[in-house]
Image 1: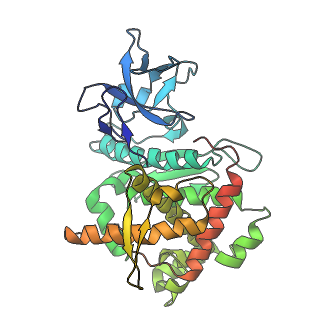
Image 2: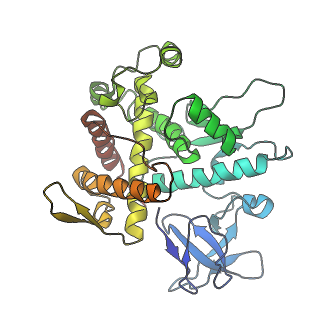
Image 3: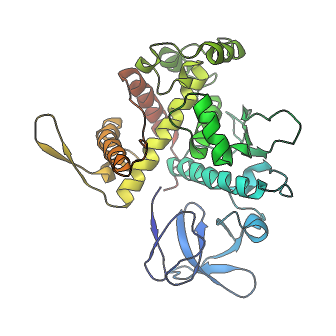
Amino acid sequence: MKVFHCDSCGNLIFFENVKCLNCGHTLGFLPFPVGKLSALLPTGDGTWRKANPGLTDQFYHQCDNSLKHQVCNWMIPMTDSNPFCGSCRLNEMIPDLAVSGNLDRWHKFEIAKRRTLYTIMRLGLPMDEGGNGPALRFKFIADVAGAPPLRSGHLHGLITINVAEADDVERERRRVNLHEPYRTLLGHLRHEVGHYYWDRLIAGGERLGGFRELFGDETAEYAAALKQHYEQGPPADWQLRQVSAYAGAHPWEDWAETWAHYFHMIDLIETAASFGILLKFPRMTGKAEIVEPRKAVAMDASFETLLENWFPLTQAVNSLNRSMGLPDAYPFALADKSIEKLRFIHELVQSTSANRKV
C-alpha cells in the first residue's frame, strides 16, 4: 500500500485517513484509474472537488456508507449515480447495526476489504461478471445469541464473512486453537479472495494442469480432507511444500493460502518502496548489498526481483519487531516448493492483468 501526501499542505497521510491532521481538509480516496487519497473541498451543493485540481476539475459525491455510518472514505465520480462507492457496492449484506458492536466490527472488515480491493485493482485483476466467472461480492454476517456460530467462506463469487473475528480476543482465540502463527482480518480476506480467483483463473481452464502439478488434485473430497486436517493435523512435513499448516488440508486451501501470501508480498514491498526504504543487507560473504524495494514494484518486475527484495525486507521487519518485544510480523519460512507456487501465481497475475489501472 502506498503512502500519500495531502494535496493542500504536503502532510503525510494514510489510506484510511478521512481528515488531514495538519491543514484540516477532508480526505477521500478517488477511485481508479486515479487511485489516490486526495484533499477535498465542498462545493456547497453536496459535491466535492479536489483541493488542488490541476488541469481538470473533477467533481465527486460521498458514499452512503460514509454519510450514514462513517465507515468509508471512497469517493464516487459525479457521472456515477450509484449511492455506493466501488467498494461498498460489492456488499450484498451487512450485519445488523442495531446490535451493539457490529458497526465497529464491520468497519474493521471494511478497512481490510478496501486494502484487498486496492491490490486487486492495482494488479488489474477482473472483479466484474464476465465469461469466465461471476462478479466479486461480499456478505458480512454476525452471530445471533443462542444460535450456532455462522461460518465464513466463498461460493460462486460471494465471500461470506462472520464479523465476530473483528473482535481481537475472538480472533486470538481462533489463532491459538488452530495453531496458527499469523491470523489477521486482512489475511482472512486475501485468503477468501484467493478462492474466488481460483474459480476465475484456474477452474476448467488451460492452467488447471499446471495447478495440479504444483498444488495437487483438487477433485479430492473437500469435506473429508478438512475433517482429517482438523482431527489429525497437517502432514508432518508440510513445511517442505506449503506456506502454512492449513495449506496442507486440501489443494484449494493450499492455493488460497499461497494467494494470500502473494498479496502480502505485493503490499509490503509497495509500502516499503513508498517510504523510499533502502536496505543495506549483509550477505554470508561478509559483503553488504543494497536492496531497493522500489525495483520490485514495477508491474512487469520479475519474480526473482520480488524475492530478492522480499527476504531482506521480512528479516528487517522481524528484527524491528523483536527490538520492541513483539512477535515476528512475518512468521513464515518459504521452502522451494512454496516459492514455485508463488512464482506460478506471479506469472498468472502478470499474464491476466492486461488492463492494469495503475
